[in-house]
Image 1: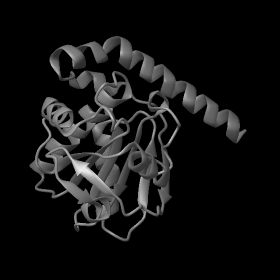
Image 2: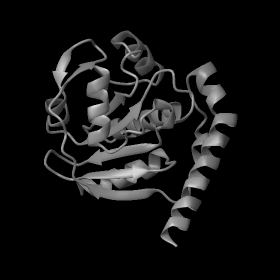
Image 3: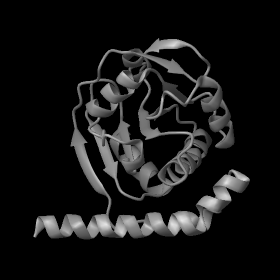
Image 4: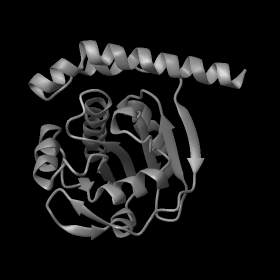
Length: 206
């Protein structure tokens, strides 16, 4: 029964992705923005798991070209919202990035200091210059950083967060939230809106 429920949830997610591709992605590619009504395309169920991950202490390259410790970037004291994207993606990534842009705006309005992190799963193509351009497209502020590195490092991070699928085209819609260093991560998987992410984030920091 659990397998059937999982398959049905996955089916709903795929339908939402198809609708997103047909009705929303062209707007993203042409205008760099989404209509808020598009965010109503959301699965009725999002998988939620509280997980502890062992994060590799590797060097990553931020969109400004600086080489930094990934562990230190994660553990600077701020709550963290994290996702995985790549610049040439035309399906899940524009949706995830737009959702993050909406979350960023609402958190800033509330005076919340949160570190938004987007990790490239196509580091060989996603240079700091490309990531900077991509970040500007979605209005990323100084609180939202993009990271790349070597292919091996990207895979190591993906495996640490249990999102590695072997091929960048197979990645899904997953967002991770952590209230502070040393705490467990909340893993959200499925099609989700900014309000859902904000609600889960606020529950964690209360």
